[in-house]
Image (cartoon, rainbow, N blue to C red; front, side, top):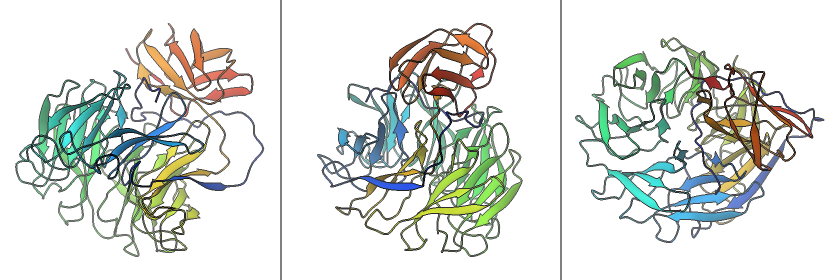
Length: 456
């Protein structure tokens, strides 16, 4: 898969300025079904889009050794295996992949490795896998969430169990594999964090725990890159219980997330929180519109949030939904088992405007599916990374970029090279300021969904 630059946490969000399109109908498509040999039971891992326009992800099981896979899939549904894990180098990769500034993929497994407790690994584009760290229990067990590469270049993550008191940890690991435990949970400040951290616009990392805290239903916490930790919210049944999804920041403002329990009916909720921890419940699921939203929300280019529920809906097998920042929810699709069961992972909005995701099980062979959902949103571009200094290299990911005539950073023109129909290589021009990146193509003008931040 031709991916060379990282997908980082969005720090600033701007609605994309896209080419004019006639509205088209909502379309759901099952792209492929896992059959065991190419992977099985892709659970919490959202897909990652590469510069070649294809997607990659992880499957918990299956593959050549039965210990899970890294897979590639094209927008048309051609599925292939990139890596098959074995117990020695780690097994059961539950988290999505991160592509770092060095071009390699980084991820975690929840079992295997030297100590048998789980690993952090690196895979080059050539497919060479290196185990960077094998957890031993005291430094954590069971990292189930994607790593985040912070602005200091190091990776940050969380483990579900282990640490000094057995309730999980927050850790930092360098690209070279040096791991530091930043915080060990003690239950009263949270327990069992199994979702990704997000670095907000203020530079601080935010995360959630599924259990623990004052009421036992989980917490929202913040932690600096150096390890200064604080709880900013304790969940209760009314505001939501057991948050199992990563937070997402809307622009430079509030963060949004979901809980799998609590709310009015006890089936989970969508909530909004300030960076100071003031939580507002936006929607409580009632079962008919979904149940247990495990996957993280994603910001669509229309300014709305999109997500999945693992259960519930018209057929009981889960849903895809849209929710406005104000809390108006629309069910977009209810799974019926033939097209998948249990969409645990969050969605990816690709640069063609379509959403892509996976289900844990069912489908043609019973091992889960990869699906797409078009809701009529047009194409846009992504800058990889989403921040950088003047003269730093930036890759632009998009659709139908051949023949592009202009690349502009918030009004300042940049020199560029069209690498392929899905990739442009450029540098941050002198005089550029933070704002949207725009690309003029023969079909129209495309704008980035996330504003590019020009660093000092």
